[in-house]
Each structure stands twice: as C-alpha cells, then as structure tokens.
Length: 302
Image (cartoon, rainbow, N blue to C red; front, side):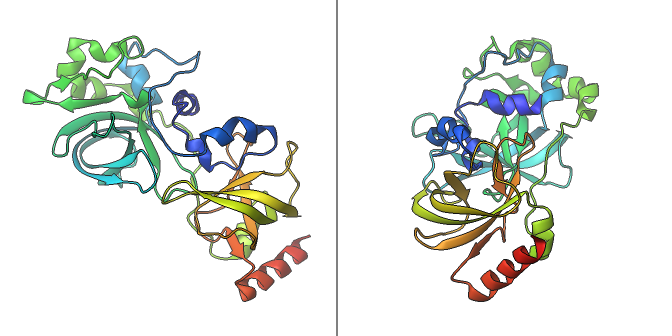
C-alpha cells in the first residue's frame, strides 16, 4: 500500500517536513537533514511477485525520456525531469514528471537522453513545491533499450522485485500493463493546499495555530529549514497529546528571536503536524498589519 511503501524508504527522510511532537521528535529529528532515497526495508516490506501487485502499489507508472537533472542546494539528492511518452497510471495533466533521485557516489544513476519505465509512489508535503515522486524501493526504474526491451539494472534486488526479472515482462511490459486491472486502483492521498484565499479560510482548515519564537534555525536545503522552538503558545485549537513541537520544518526564511504565528494541520495519520499550506501559513510579527489582522481573527475565533 502507498503509506507502507513510503515507510520502506527509511532513509528517504521526507518526514523531515513533519512537525514532530513530543516523543515523535526524538525518533525523527535525526532524519530531518535531507531527502535521501536509498534502499531500505521494514520487516513487513512486500515482495513483488507479480506486476499487478507492483502496479497496484504505484501512484505513477510512466515511460519517458530523462531530459534534465536539477541539483538541490544543500542536498545529496536531486530532481530527475522526465518528458512523458506513455502514462499508464497517474496524473494525466502532467507532461513532465519530477522524480527524486540519489547519486551513486558523485555520479548520477540515470542518463539524460535515455528512456525509462518507472513505477513510483507519490506524496506531498507543504515545505516542498512539488510532489515527492520516488521509484518503488528506489529500484523500480528500468531502462528501455533496443527494440523497446527493458534492461533490469544491477541495482534491482531480485529478492524484493522478482516479478520484473521475468523475461516476458522485459519484452511485453506494455501489454501486461494495459491488461492490468491494477491501473484503476487509486491510492488515497491527501493533497497539499498551495495557498488559501484568505486567513479566515486557512484558519477554518487548520487544527492548531501557535505563536512561536525560534532559538536556532538550521538550513536543510534550498526548500526547507528546521526551526528549534524556544517559546511556543497555542493560539487556536488544542495542544497535541504528545506535547507541543520542539522543532518545526519551514519553507520560508525565518530568523531566530523573531515571533511568528504558524498555522498547522495534522497529517493523514494524525500523528504529526504540517504547515497548513505551502504559502501564507507563517505570519511574521515584523509584518505589523498582517500580524495585527491575524491576531484579531484568532481572538474572534476563540
């Protein structure tokens, strides 16, 4: 299932963008440095013995040409940009897909100008401007070679993905996929709101609003910083049972010592808090007009 696959990539620390509360923080703070899609499995990680099973767990299945690599400042990973030739499963409005990828050493794993078939999971976090789309196990990406035959690379572990080693799949993958009922299986995903039309609408869709001052702000990458919470007060909603956050993942340039109002919502599992939107969820005390308007809105709602 989608949620489980996301957990399998343990070192794919997308959870950095979660605002971990109480004891959750202790287990996640060490992973809060980067997105890094490496091979790692939980004890209950599924073994993909059929293409139907693999297709069912994928959010995206596409065949496309790798057109560009984009480095992410401060990160060990980068974006791979694919121009889609055939989309078997996923958002049909997209003509280009960004894939999260990690190099082997200092070299990219995949080659610009080469065509690949990809089975990937996808999820969104408000600190990132794009969906985080990852090949399943960081392995389910196969080069399309001569005469359209797939090349199963040496980084693919047969123990976890035995289905793709079937010679019939390498040659007849297109027909196998088109005949698969799993293409119709849509895995539930909570979308991230880019920006609400006004603060009242954002408040109505927020679980918690806090006023907070950070003692330190750590740069993670060009998208994310982690603010170490100094003083924090709940201005709206109820404090999480596990306690108020000790660190908050942010997607704006914030300063230690300055006070902020931050709109938050729980993730789909209701375990961690996220920014309520990509834009507008952080209100600065230095923006006097917006700050005062937001304070008045919070008072009216209490």
